[in-house]
Image (cartoon, rainbow, N blue to C red; front, side):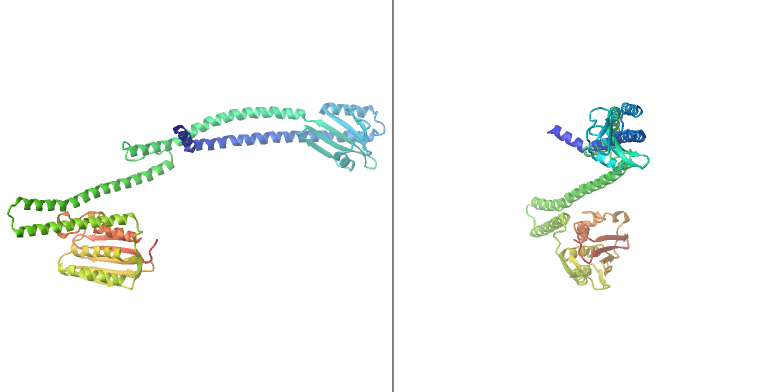
Length: 476
């Protein structure tokens, strides 16, 4: 099985395909050239022989008419020329009168017999007839014998000539061509193997380098500069590897953050429980206080787990979206109405500004959660007597929600990471402010599920702006 797989993989390999292409481009033209050269030589040789015999035959037919050979075939001059022509071309000559009777046969076989053939009939009608039979290997030429005075056809001179000599030359030429073809084929095979190996080597090296990186003992980057194609593949692969490294680092940091966030409430609860256990006669008030603290830590743990489960569901797919046409103006008014008590407690002013009526296809529950997270963050990270402005606008394709506050702001070095899970700008105050560090990550996931986009702009100490853009019509 392994051997079969190895053979199958070789036939599918780039090296084999390059070898095949090089062989085809090397050998096919030689086969074609051999075929057309030999056919061309054969055609040319036969044509030259036909023209030569035809010209000799016409000269002899004129002498047949001039010497009255059809009345008296004993003329030595004409007979000698028949014999000479027959010997030179290794052929047979027949002289036939208008009654289709054979007056002369240089082979002395059919003299006095009647011959009726298509060539003879056409020739008596005044046509020159040439015919080449490659199967039987002969040329046949029929020339009319004309009476000089009145230009009447009085007979036919039929010449049959063997093409054995020409065929011998063609066979010899074919043998030479075959020898040349075999030699050139061997050279082509060797060159094709060498070239295919050289052309495929960078790609084989690229595959080995990727295997080494995957195994963990290769370099951090692929660097194969043999061809522009391999350079481009290396660049794209290195970009992919860099992204994978970032994702892996992010995953490790996420796991670390999750462990820390889940462990912190458990540690607090254990400390509180141990403190109670160490006191034999602790007052009931202390029990109540510690139990309340334990309850708060349980609630905090539960909120973290709930947010994590929400993120996991959003990561899987957007199939859980319940899309419906919704009045966005009313949705924002409802969100601010729910959050206004929290804002009043912090002495933060909430303002909603709608530039036009907006109706869009969204998931009401998820979009409410996303906008609420942004507004709630604006309230939490604000100063006393601050403000949070929410504005709504739209064009023919998208609607836009802007959440702006004049709170503490976000440092520039943290702005690119605020949508990461569990990332906190100021970890020292995270417990005081509350939250799980997952709010912005959840918001971003919800916006992306709606095929939208979210951007943040901030100046430390002056405030933060979140711009959300979502299509009016949900894109499946």
